Length: 231
Ligand code: DC
Image (cartoon, rainbow, N blue to C red; front, side, top):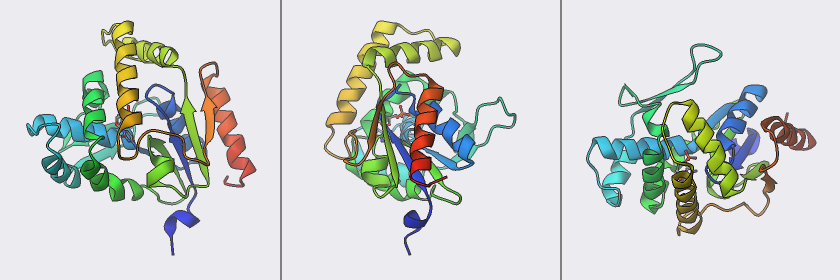
């Protein structure tokens, strides 16, 4: 029996800064479902590569690191608190969110051996009562038979603005122009890699959030779920 056919999964793919992370978390909270932040796994692998001095193009060594990645996702201890993540027992919640690690994550994610090594780990997140899966290839590869697939996008300029505000709020000093360049470079790498490139699944609902609020996006997705009798 195929677990994926029985348990509901919503995939939310799209480029960085499209609001996927925020929307996925809010949706998972609203539905009481689990959430997979697949980008965090690639970020954690990049961080592990840094701490073990593994080169970002050493596919074999990265594959071994990926298979043995010692990760723990820790739920927020207060309703307003952020959930955290431990790598080999160390709290890396903040560092893996930096632009530097994001860019390294995009590099390791381009390697087919790395993607293969993380596949089953991602699928194991599908547990009752359901899963919201956030990433780049959730609908095309990891959960290709998901009953609802969303491809969330927004203009590069809008995404750079959102990221700028997010980082400023966290006290990181960044330049908007540099962020825009970085977003464009990351889009290019994620969309043009040979394995599991970022693109909407053939049966995805494409949603441009450039001029939508978070609640509008959320309501739209909930309606799609209701229309498919998934809630
Ligand atoms: O969503 P994010 O910014 O945390 O993802 C970091 C990088 O990881 C992103 O540039 C591409 C890669 N990634 C991927 O290739 N496949 C996924 N399912 C998720 C992320």
